[in-house]
Length: 243
Length: 243
DNA sequence: TAGTGGTCTAGACCACGAC
DNA sequence: TCGTGGTCTAGACCACTAT
Image 1 (cartoon, helix red, strand yellow):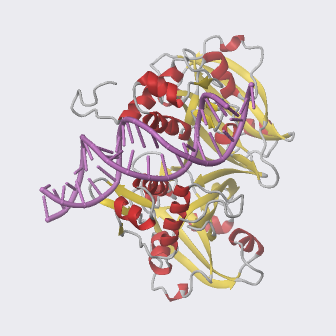
Image 2 (cartoon, rainbow over the protein chains, first blue to last red):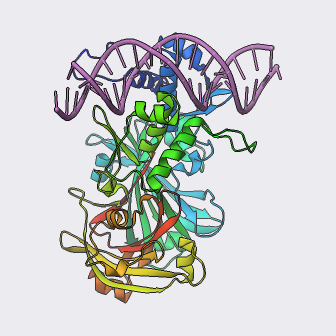
Image 3 (tube, helix red, strand yellow):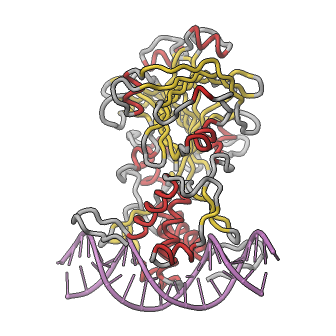
């Protein structure tokens, strides 16, 4: 194992070093979503630490939703469609009735130079290019969200070659470009519907909308998606759990 | 330690049983906020399990923000004013500049029978009484929030005997009634400012507001506070971190 | 120097799933 | 029956804090 104190200040516990090296396997695609990874005992032998230390690393990654452990079966790399994973990033919930995932309809896809807000949010150089996707989303045939997604061109080559943009784009990012969304930060405001919003959502101009600005981050903590959603919250609310 | 399988289906790991019994000490006030609790070794001896099992229980409680551990010093019961604890439940953040806690001004305090919404949110019997507190909150002298708080009378006797309602009410709940807020669920919507809202917030009638309905839960998971906040989000946003 | 929590190890046994 | 992850233990050593 690497020396802990080589620089004098960079001490990291062994299990954190192990965690980082295992996350690297995910980043580099050596471990693919859905794959069964080696057992604790095998990993312990391979890495050269005790089973208990491997366990602490795996438990940490499980807490980050990167792995799924199943007693008696083994440890698997988490997939974007894994159970709650779907709703992990989708917080809009019907006021009454079951939670559901909305349908989507892409209205526009274009390639342009990133504007200032996009460059700042996605940490891009001046002159960088991005994809812009506009789509509207509905729940039970009721218009719900009008949103625009911005993606760095470099991370998503040939996005315009897609035949269709599927409903669950994070699954697409993972399968087609090996981009894993690990976490996201959302900023919410109440805004007024513009004429465009009103047309897309079938509401009055000036109606109150919930605006959600999301920056989604990959496994290395780099921003890879900027998304602005404007939502009608007449029959739906944004659920936030504070623990 | 208690028998694990007495009912046949109620198996709980030892460290969970230990956690529950230690949480009980918090609930019953045997351990007070800010207090130094016994060391791992002492607890292990007292409870009759290994130090490792005690550690798992304490680590779980630390993850729930119930305890604060300090290497070399010991383990302390968390206090409502502990560092991030302040912002744990206050998610409104200035668009620019430092995060700050708003000032508050109570405009009304009354005692009434709970209405249907309040009874449902707080799980109260028909005819139960509640306190209703109305207050407006400001950040840097700018009106920000108009909110109404509902509390069950049973849990908060003599609320009207207070000389003043302080800024941080969760600290008050803890110190005066030994009610600890452990977690909360918030439901957000975009709404339109009523004439009352407009007066309280100094905005136009019909302006878009962010409405936050919060139900706050105690250590036992029972709802103890219902709060409806209506917020001007012109210079501020609600921050939600999805991991 | 003594005591605390933090890390790391090694090994035992249990519960679960597949065969 | 076997291999997996889950629990539990016991003990060693380290890093931090107070005295």
